[in-house]
Image (tube, rainbow, N blue to C red; front, side):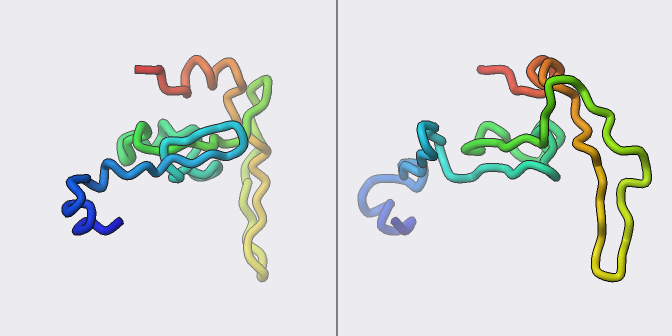
Length: 104
């Protein structure tokens, strides 16, 4: 629906249903932040309204915290770059207590 056709129908672009289903999960919209560089999401909350996202795929998580691989973690090669981050993460308990947004 274009903005002009939305105006002609008395509807605004905000009225369009963008929800999607992936298996048994239903998301408000198809915009899902990918894991990895988006971290736990909170690191970008000053740039992105996390409540506007359809979902968030967090970085890797383990039962217990993992410090990850020691530095250096990156190595340039003639063919590109190798990395060995070692799945550094805060663990499930800290993730739930400190990193997940609280329901409003």
